[in-house]
Length: 288
Image 1 (cartoon, rainbow, N blue to C red):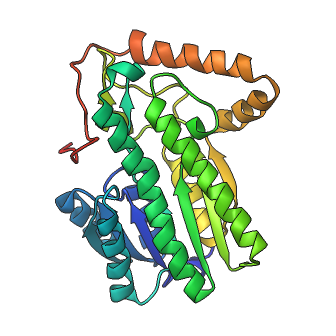
Image 2: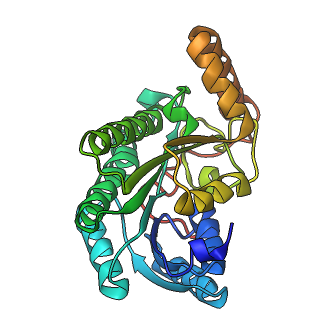
């Protein structure tokens, strides 16, 4: 894809300090985008912004906790104040607490919902108000394949991601009915990737949090996020087996859910080394 399709476009990315957010920001910077980077850790975020500027893009860092609506409103204001308008908004921030539902503290479940679902709703709301006024824009919401196919021990995360998938479906329906053809809403549903996500997750299994195999290179999802900035699609699953799982789940839901349950139980309770219970980075940004 030509960099001409990216150069000068203003992109807001939440959860930009690590993982998909960081790598997507760096790739978009190389293509000449103007970036508004958001995350809770101000110091780490500023390092990413510095890397983006060194890679050829413009970038500002805005410390932001997406579970706090006032922070999300301020993020949008800063983006418009700095660059005049927003072309693309990527809701990527996410956390999880892993464990048996009744053994994960209720405050962890609530914070997962506030971050992963309410934060995405807030970001979508401010982005779409801006896009409506402009008549154009692309909203990209990062959900999860767990937003299509449930997994045990990820209950509140699954609830949030199912909510994100439903939110995007409803928004696309609204836009179609109102013939707002210049505005696109994209849903990205990754499989497990080798990012810091599980290092930062809360864990109440007696073991370290671990990804459900198979594990994919983050570049798979980063490349898709970069592509969607220039060429939006309604809904994509990143990670090859996820597409097959989704098709098989429609045909044989009980079989696929049983397989998912078995893989999840093994991944969280049998294979990882022991670890003490921890909320990880659910409530506070990680220092790692």
